[in-house]
Length: 530
Image (cartoon, rainbow, N blue to C red; front, top):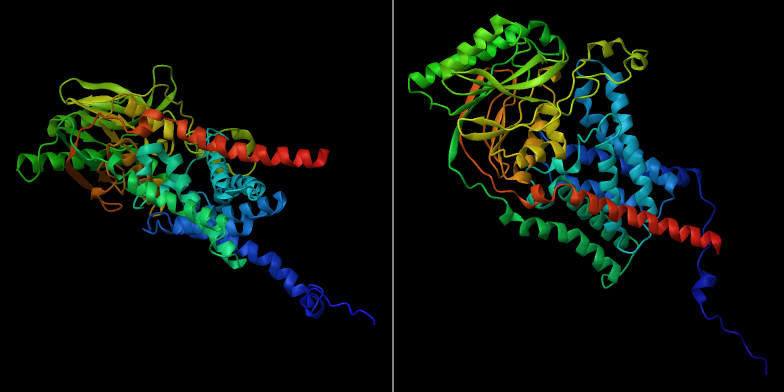
């Protein structure tokens, strides 16, 4: 009798063999991940002000996680670059308002290159256990790098700045913008990995699936748990602060051509407020804040400018922080805040420390002139060296001039130096009615929570605002209007955990990302050696 061999797996014999991949399938395999990466960037952009769509930020990272997982490093770089273009091209469009598209596109591409390198790193760690955790650390490495290089860095668009209204915001008081940004990214990557595993038909009892779901949920729980760290209490009483927005004669870079008109506008608005105080229509302020560039005429060298400023300060009867462009004792220009007393005149000063490249100074001017003559419109300012807190009628006010609000260390230095209130004097007239002013206002709101301070935002042309220590806006102006805000704000001296620990959260998170990359590289070398 002949034995009959029975197949152990009939499905292997009956299942149809896949045919060769068609051109359409091959094209779809390439275009779908690219489209998902661009979508990721666009969603992240849409999470930023002036829109109140903070919840889009974690969902922006879900498709990125989906397409980067298991990719080769080269593909990771390309997909990260595409995400960066979808993000930075619309986010930074304000940079081309008055100088054309070339600088805007060049900046967006340069920043997108950082995201390309970040995508490369995420692709490398994506095969590690609990990879969303390592990937979140890699993202912080990328943000830390672009906040420092080149030309002093450009941290504009850090993920944390999308969250002034978000559930994750209290984490800023615990670990600053690095921890806040990490929480958003981890939630998104965890969510993306859950979807990836479900699409792969994994069962819900899969331990890795449960881990990814936990990683997506932990940042939300942590944000709720950190809520008690956010306080608005007046630890040393309150101060009545006036924020002056004088407006400018016209928008764009050429507004500087009417420097005296800008000064006169701020003098006029201060005199109007003084009249309202005298008539009982407004409360007498303890201190007054003028914006950056409110006097582009040097009051140290121009007696007329000094006289009109002094007139306004005496009329309001309170110390005024005046934003001025001056020539310092060394003969070099400074972007300066001057503490102007109604009795003694100009006194203490704060010189802007973190200058804006291509605006307040021009690196490699001769080289960049080959591409655009607009480089000659950039200034030649010298940076200040030290933090400075103004004693304004007994209240410690820490100036953080405009662009500096994007830099963690500058803001932290002012709080550690004794600022009970933060002031962010700015000049946004150059960027007209673009979204730039709203993006900066969102940064200021995050800084309020990070350091537990009320933040005053005097702007030449708007939006000026009074921000409570919990990040909510108490008062705000419109754009391109002459207005004054008078508000009673808490004076605070306690330091949040974020202020105390400084740069340590960023360092720890970056080291975690670097450790994940080192682990992958070591594995690859071991595999090659074997």
